[in-house]
Length: 230
Image (cartoon, rainbow, N blue to C red; front, top):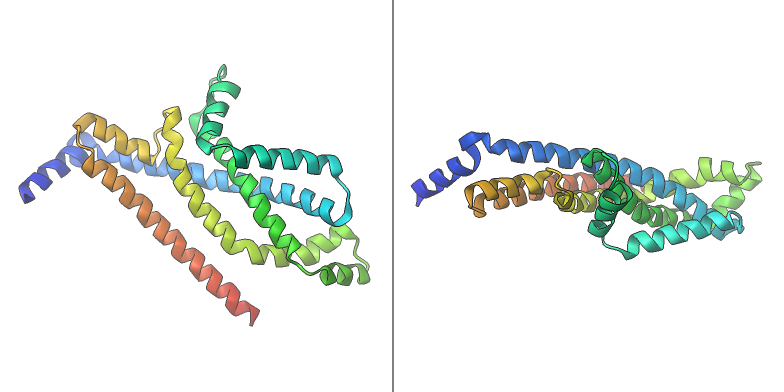
């Protein structure tokens, strides 16, 4: 039994340096996740500001309408379909880096959910905070920037951390555009050795470890935020 496991381990990871498929795929997965999170946060923040401004002041009606269309389309369609449309339809006739396509697809998808996270954080701030800002002589933009957003951002940080974890796992569908991410790396090994157990189990273990680490970091962040409220 032990000799069989050793032989399979050698065949799947040591022979021909096949472990590099996992390692290189991990790097690609983390790169896509990081830049997609940045894009999602920026886009989500802008959409949330537009929507919350419309709800509180009635201004930016056209922009709010466009944002609602974006949210409806993105949240109403699977991320893998969005990825395929961006790669095969939008950039079908253009030679473009697959990592960039993945960042764009997952960033646009994440931005829709981050927008609602930010909006809920902004709307959770009591209207008395707006009145306090106006009494200090701030206009609406200054009140949002100096008073509302710092409180809202603090409230939504744990939710943003969870969105990062979800996005990390969602990137596992990047193989649909033949990008060598972590999942695809394990599948390449499987196709060469005809042994699915070890490579795919290793991929699952790597995802599990990363999720556990990020979940722990999010829980630490939540605990520190609760302590700072006292």
